[in-house]
Length: 400
Image (cartoon, rainbow, N blue to C red):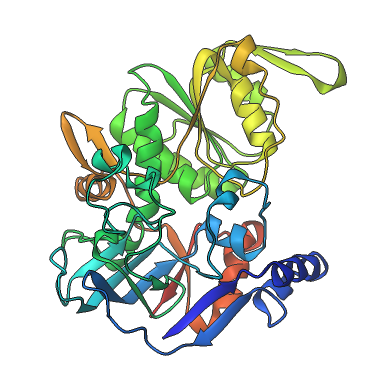
């Protein structure tokens, strides 16, 4: 098994971060916490285990946060029992090559996507599922720290992985390998939009047009076609993609409050010490950046009693001004991964909904993979994914 994993020992993480401040290449060198290794193939010993050979896998922003040690051990999730080794990569299309004795959900030769990367009641063999798993919200499992089940090995940044059968989704044959790999970020966008779906005629703002922002734009366009979608991008090539994928109003780096005034007719007031207050604003704002600044802006750009959905993430504590939560009664919602969603009277897996919308040409995935590398050039792939200004990358893929 050729794979890239991270050594999560604290001294190595601290050293990797310190060296990375001096030289960005340290993160992908022998001095960093990540390792490119050739390990013995893990046996299929658990009855529900499945071995998957990767065909296409992608680099996610969360992978880069981990690789660059952009994390704070004081955040809530860090309190859960940790593992010593973390395999990178979860957006992928693979082929089933070996199955455990009791596997029923997939068979040899099936193409699959990887989903529900965290443990759940299903993957741990819990007989009576928790309330969240019972509703198909496996990403919110109350038993995810129990341990047990299949010992997952490998990830998308490798030639294979071994996971529980409940973590795999069989896509329709009409989808290409690239489209299958992109179902994961598409599902993230759909889940976020369904948490605060704009009504016809309402105005929605998407902050950030990386892959999750672009998927959120598409989900809005597909599920609420009569809403007005505004997108704010950091780079011109991202703005062009957002326009192509359904945003009516697109701007590159510019004062977002001026944009809000133009689109929504709201009024901006600027006070001492850099204080800003917006009266009026967007009905719903999707923060697909996930920084202190973007969350602070998102809460101000929403109208009174509007909604903000935090889609982008950071693995450290936020330093954001939350005063609009009480002064304007803005509702702040968190969005994490995806689950079984409700749409038009149906309850269906987010991957299934994403695949259906792709087949209906309501979500366009072609052209979103802009760079491809063999696994052996993973250091170059990482730099292409991280430095979007230089490389104009939307999604970077490993081809096997």
